[in-house]
Length: 284
Length: 298
Image 1 (cartoon, one colour):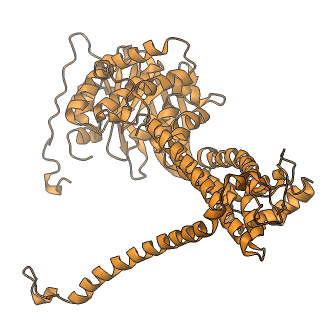
Image 2 (cartoon, rainbow over the protein chains, first blue to last red):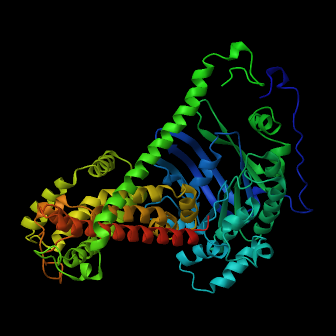
Image 3 (cartoon, rainbow over the protein chains, first blue to last red):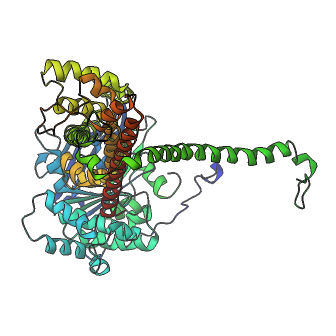
């Protein structure tokens, strides 16, 4: 906690936002949309965790969702592939448009949504099976007709894990280090060739070296996939993302969107006072 | 015992010092005694049974039918009867029990209805076995007109052990972390694919242990089978599920209720066989458990 008298005496943390490569100044207007969120609200029983969030997730970019604890970041990202409703008594209002289709429309099978919009979780959660089986599982259950071995190798290479595990594909995935396990979970997610990969604080259980590896990996993956990452680490959002959404909560504790734009703009020239206070470390 | 040892604290720390020391020695001795008492009871049982029965144990004992003469009495029909009954009991109770557990743990929503079902299953596990005998008599023997057959006996025992299997299987399913289910669902697996490929395999060791425990209970049950009218004296091999039958504990009970001491030796021999079968079942359970645990890679 910051002592009251220290509040308001200028930024406590100076954030370094890397300048984008020449000629790649991001502008939301010029982007294709991968996922369009319209007036989304989410509840746990009678508690409203998300209120009226609308935003367009740009295609083949990394979008970070940041905000203080309890502002509904994880809830929001779980609404993007219908994982939220797995919690008993959870429900959603509003629309999430993916490939021209509202994924919450009646008749849409959540199983299909999840096979097109993958997810990586906070704590690495490999299956208690071999490394190979971890990646192959998604292929099998989705009725993949191609060569499973090749697909597994391709996914592991894309996740920058192949060289470390190629000689022990049939060993337990749980013998890998935490960072390797998380990259395995990413390989597993991209093996089924989703359009979007959602990452819910993927580095919060990892050490700094493993975190940097995952961040490098995300940059690589953004060439082929749309990535949405929830993070409580503002430096990470600044380092890795193209666009940043900031969630805040009011007295009613429901999270809502206060700012969304190119990461550089959000961090250097925030439009909202609360964003500025948050990213400069005055609260959060 | 000296109150002030080399490292003794000053007097203000020595309140009830002897009491604490004494309890520290006494209570561990008591719990050790409790363990020894249960082991001693088991050893005593084995010694007494072995003393009476070992002399009567021979290959003939398993191949001969029961007889009026103690010297010729055999265990054959009871042994075969137990195998038949156990086979059918497992056939009915294992799939239904695991199925019910999967439904309750993985599919049912939590509401008043499922809570009533849960409470009932937990209570059913404690209902005296003779009550199941009456149920079997009413439903299977009379209403479904199966008569006192192997099928009726198996169905009755299946009902008896069903709650045990359900409770054990739920325990096993619950031991699999939720994050595994999430990982599977997020890949686009259906709930059923998730249960079948990711939840059931790591839960199997626990489930199997419960199944074997349940069947071990069923193989020793006597009261419900007497209630449904299983015979105690059978001089032929059961050939199908509709045949009348006897089982090992029933035959032992019959021998014990005879006045001649020679028959009590035969009963002791029967008990040895029953215990060996139980032991074999537990060995199978341990082997299966080991095998599944090796496949589970955590």
